Length: 277
Image (tube, one colour):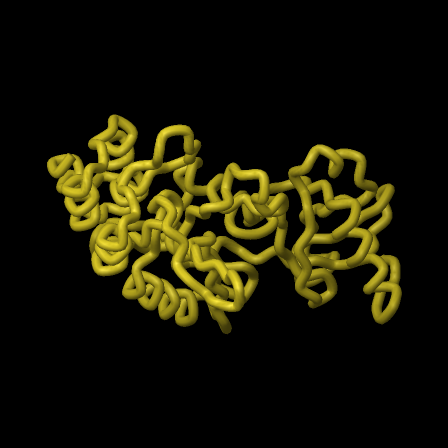
C-alpha cells in the first residue's frame, strides 16, 4: 500500500479533488440543490472533511476516483485513486438515521434539514426574490430542490428544533447552519433607510399574518402589477406553505385564486388552502 499523504501533500490532494472533482464508483450521500453549491459530495479524506463536485459534466475527465474497498485497505471503507494507484483512505458517512423519521403532521425530517457530515443545515425559506432574475447568485440552487420535491417551502421553528434534537441524538450533529432566500426589501437613499413601496412579490413571509397585513395596509398590491414578471406570486407561495390565513388575507385584498395556487395546494397536501381558494 502506498504511504498515506499528510501535511502539504494532503493539502495539495484535497485542493485537486475540489478543483477537478471526483468520479464515484458507488452511491454516496450528497447535496443536489439548496441555498449553496448544488453539486457537493461530502466525505473525509484521511480524517479531513472535504466537499467536492462529482456530478458536473467536467468531472468525467477527472483523474481522481472514489472507490469502495475491503477491510484490508483500511477502516474507512473507501479509497481515493488516480490511474489505478491508491492515494488516500476515505470515509463516506452512512445515511443519517433521523432521515427515516417524520413530524407529527407527516413531514419527513430530511425535507426539513440535511446532515452534512456532522453539521445540520436547513434553508428556512426555500424561495428567493432574486431567483430567476439577472442578479441571481450564479452558484446557488435554492429553488431547484423545492421544484424537485426534495424539501418544503418554509420550515417552522418547532420542526427545526425537533429535527435538530434528533440529528444530535441519533447521528452526532454538532452544529446547525441556517440559510434563507432573500426576502428583505429595504433601501438606503440620501442616508435614510425606508421600506420601498413595491409589490409583495418575492417578499411574502409565510405563516406571518401580521407582516403581510402590514405590507397590504401600507399599499403594497397583492397581485404583481401589469408588465412585472415574477416566478411565484404571494398567493402561490402562501398556498405552497399551507398558510391558509395569509391566503384568505391576500384574497380579501384582491389576489386572484389562480390555478397555480390551487395546484401547489394539492401538491403539498393543503386541503384547507384549496378550500379557501
